[in-house]
Length: 266
Image (cartoon, rainbow, N blue to C red):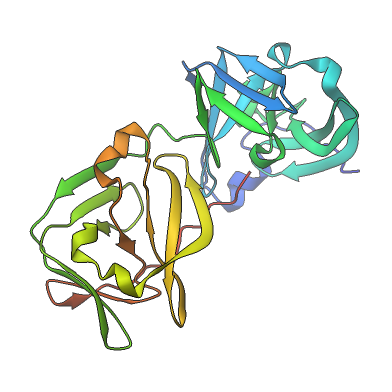
């Protein structure tokens, strides 16, 4: 067990070493629910959304909006130098137990005082999450992430080991906050005969479910959203190639994939 440090004046200990680290909570106007085994665990219209440097956003529910009959105290604790000591709880629904499914900060540091009386859940330990009547996936959506999709006349060419897989002068470019641009090509401009469906699928909280394609000697080199979320409907059915897997040139310049952001997942 961690021992809660004594209350002290001034900033929490972590800020002394990392003064640029930020923790902030904002009120979220959305109704948010989550479910386990078809049972609603939490349902709130008074959500808080936690933003913290280096982490994805996290929903915090008022404890009064959580079905307390499903919560079982855990002996697990952890310490955050910016927020305080977290205490964990299990969830039990219909004979099923999910270990350490969520946590609270009973006595948060002053900088995170708004966390008191709230609890959060590991997103993937619940079966489903909903904003209003629409299901969401992967993690809470960040209201400061923006997606712009622009028609372009740039020349995009895709090759692998000298074999041309695609050539287009009419890509849609998807610009997403903090991520590199993605070039979505019409299937008519892609040599689909060289590609085969993959079993891989992934989900994006902003775009929907992606399916992948492969070719001999290169797995999951491109993806498509056949039924994307309405906000990005323009890319439906188009193909985007990953510059780490194949050679993608745009107006003659080879794309270099930057390292992914370090976003610990909940």
